[in-house]
Each structure stands twice: as C-alpha cells, then as structure tokens.
Amino acid sequence: MKPCNRPAVDSGGRLGIITHPMTREVKMSTSARTSSSTKALGLAGLLLAASASASMAQAPTTASPTFVTATMPVYAQMIRFRVPVSYAPAFSKNNEGKFYIFEMVPKGETVDRWTSMMTITGQNGAVTTIPPLRDYIGNFFSRYQKACTKTFSAKPISDAKINGHAAVLVYFSCGQLLKAGYGPEGYSESVVIAFIQGAKDLYTVQWAARGAGQDKPIPFDAAKWQSRLDLLHAVRLCEKVPGEAAPYPSCIAVK
Image: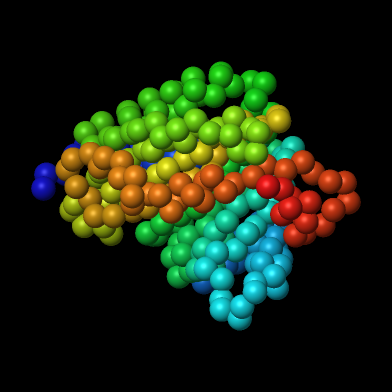
C-alpha cells in the first residue's frame, strides 16, 4: 500500500484532536512510574482501587470481575465509568485548572504504544463559553478531517441522555498514521466518543483502538464497537456531596 500524507500526531502518537491539542508534560510507563508521575496519578489511581475493591466485595461469586466501576471528581461534578480490570492508569493532567485529561491503557502498554485506550476529559466551565454541543462537535470534526485527509471516516451514532445530561455519540477514524517504529504502513486509529454537557463543564469519554494501517477509510462497524458503546451509555455524571470520600457511594448509587 502507498502511505498517505502524514497526519499530525501528538507526542503520545495520537491524533491530538482526539483528546486535546495540548503539550504533554507528564508521561509514564504503566509498569514503571517516576515519583512525580505517581503523584500526578495518585488521586485517580486511589479512586480506581477503591471502586474496584467495592465492586469485588459486592460480587455474588468468587470469580474475578471483568470490569470495575470507578468514580472521580472532575471540576464541578463526578464522573462514574466502567473499565476492564486489565487496564491501568497511564496519564493524567490538570492543565492550569482549565482542561483535565485522564487515560488508561491495557496493563503492559504505554501512552506511546498501545492497542486500546480509554480517555476522560473535562473542560472547566465550557458550557457557558463553547458553541452549542453539535456546533462544537462540528469544529472537532473539521480539525480531525484536516489532520487525516485521505483515510478519514466519521459517523454520528446517536443523541443520548446521560442521566439527564445532553450527550452526542460519534465515531471518528483515520485509516493510516505514520510514526517511527510502526513500519512503512503505519497504523490505524479509530475512536467512539461521548460528548456530554454537564451542569457547568463539557466532558468526553472516549474508547480508542489501533490496528494495522490501511490506505482507505475504515467505516463504522456497529457490531465491533457495541461493547464500547455500552460502556459509554453506562457513564454517569453525579453531583458532589460535601465531605464524601472515595469511593463516593452517592455517585455509585446513581441509576
């Protein structure tokens, strides 16, 4: 196959527009983190561990759970989500109190080289400063398409309500990204994203996957992505309860 023009990628190898066009200041391996990296991920890691323990304690059998439920505060609200037990925190940053990003990859993988990734972002106070949700997604779409001109694919999946909050689910894909270490054909990257309008902030929850590079767009395959779409529909936004500690039982109880 003939490689296409090289799309812009961020320092982690992703199309930066999938998460946020920002410079990364903290990186780590999931198997060996520095003390500063551990500090950056300390809160998220503790919340994941606490929620995992709670989920296992409630399990009716002794079988190991496939997924755990995690909760974390992100600006004005809490986010509750489900993640495979085989995933581990890989990156976390609060960019000057304006933009938060948290990423998990399968254990043994890193933010530089991964096969699948779960990302949560929060844009502080964005509900009052951004265009309407669909216009915002349209701008996002345009940036993605410019970064992947030859093998770009996209599909609006559905409008949704995340426990009362307006949300839109979309699919974006780039059939071929070129980066050192991936061979002449590079790799593909596809993602399903839930854009969620919180009470004050704009959130995204994203499930991305990488595969072999190809010189044509990758259409949306509903059957392939259904399990990840189910995880997006399981996301909940919760109000903060003063004085409540991890694992935030009030949020876990939200239907």
